[in-house]
Every structure is written in structure tokens, then in C-alpha cells.
Amino acid sequence: MENAIEIRDLTKSFHNMLTKEDVIAVDHLTLDVPPGQIFGFLGPNGAGKTTTIKMLLGLIFPDSGTAHIFGQPAGEIDVKRKISYLPESPYFYEHLSGYEVMDFYGRLFNIPAKARKKRVEELLEQVGLGAQMHKRLRHYSKGMLQRVGLAQALINDPQLLFLDEPTSGLDPIAHLDIRDLILRLREEGKTLFISSHQLSDVEMVCDRVSILNHGKLLRVDNLSALLAGETTQVRAANITDEVFQGVKEIAPESMVSDGALSARIDPEKVDELVDYIRRSGGSVVAVTPVQRTLEDIFIETVRGGNLS
Image (tube, rainbow, N blue to C red; front, side, top):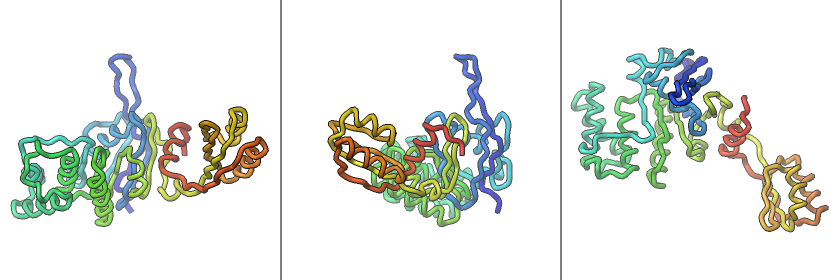
């Protein structure tokens, strides 16, 4: 099956006018995204995520390497008809209403008047703005603007959507509504390429994720495979500073406050840690299995710089 996105050795650098040096934003990136998936494109600020998305959209061009969308070079006119983009902070003319904004974008795609009116109203209802569609955007909240942005990204019924921080700054209800809409879009067979720092959202909706840092791809896999396995949390009391130094040698991910210890450790080392605490005069309070989270994987990967 043809990939929705196929990237090979994509590289992009920018010239820093202050240091007079070239800064590599994306470094020989190779990545495949199958169709019909929600793909999480993760990384800290400055990792190269937005630069990559702009190259896939055809807004900027790579120094080397290739990017194809549904088998065609990124940036082709035919490709642009099949894709859509929601930036982190969408901007629209505030004197227009939600309906007028949607109508404008529908006209850009040459959607006939009768079909355009029907689609605009359906999309605004879908994102929860049916009752406010004729209100001016200057009176919209950030969450409402984000909903309009998502609606306009759907006006051309795209096969592939690029969403940059789609739930950023939303209240809990809007947050949940947008997340549910993303899942419905997958059920319709669309491919979604999501860049987000909301790792809990990514964990709930994505099929596969990648982690990028300093322009390099550090990890890419099915989410279920990344989250497989458990760690164990050990809590203890009466831990002196001297005993804590020994604990750190067994369980580096540990902290102590007023003699109370909290440690994350591989299950295979639990017995060793518990025995050490008891021998040293400490009291084990609890031993609890903990499922790994995407946040754990993200921090472990970015701080460790692991390539896999």
C-alpha cells in the first residue's frame, strides 16, 4: 500500500546571521507514514518539527533529500488539493464571521455555492460552532478560533491533515471535543500527522509516534510497542542521606524528602532495593507496578539521545 508520507534523507539548514554559521534544522530524516493512521510527530522546542511540516506542505524547500505525499512530490498542486494544515495559532480576519471565513475557503477550492453552504454549516456544527457561526471572530475565544481553524482545515475533505498543537490552550470541554473529532476523522479513513506537546492526548489517539531532537529521528514505532512493559514504584520511610546514596546506585530514578523515598525501578531490581532498604534500617511502605507512559518514553529518549 502506498504511504501517505514518504520521507528520504530530508535535510534543511538555515544561516544564522548572528553567528554566521549554518544551523541544521532537519538532519537526514527518513520516515514513512502509512495511510489511515494518526501519527504523532514529537520533539522538544527546536527539534525541527515545524520545519519538516513546512517542507511537506511545500512552503519551504529542502537542501537535499525527498518528500512524497501519496506517491507525488510534496508541494505539487495535485498534492495540495489532498492535504490540509492547522497551525498552532491560526489567524483569520477578525471582522469576518465563522461562516464567512469558511465560505471564503470553500470558494478557494471552487466548491459550488449550494454544496459549499451545506458543507460549511455541517463542519461548523461538527466542531461545536453551529450556534455561533454568524458571530464575528473578534468575539471568539481562543478555543472557538481553534475550532474554526479545524473546520477550515476540513473544508476540502482532505485525505491527509497536518495538525500543529491542535489542543493547545483549550478548555477541558473543547479539548475533549477536538480529541473526539480527531478519532472520528481516522474512522473516516483520513491520515492525521500531529505535532503536539500534549503527550497524554498523543497517547490516547495515536497509532504510531516518532521522536525528533536536534533535527534527528531518535525513535519511531507503534505506540503499543513503545509502551509495552512496566516499571515499579517503591515507597519507603526512614531513609537517611547516607542510605539514599546507596539507593541511587540501585535505582537512579529516585528522590527523598524528609526521609520519605520514592523510587522508579526495573521490576527485576525490586528485591535488591527492598533488601537494601530493610538492611539499612528503612521501612518499605509500598511496592506498586506502574505502566510506562509516553512521557516516560519521551524524556528517556530525548535526554538519552537514543537512536533506535
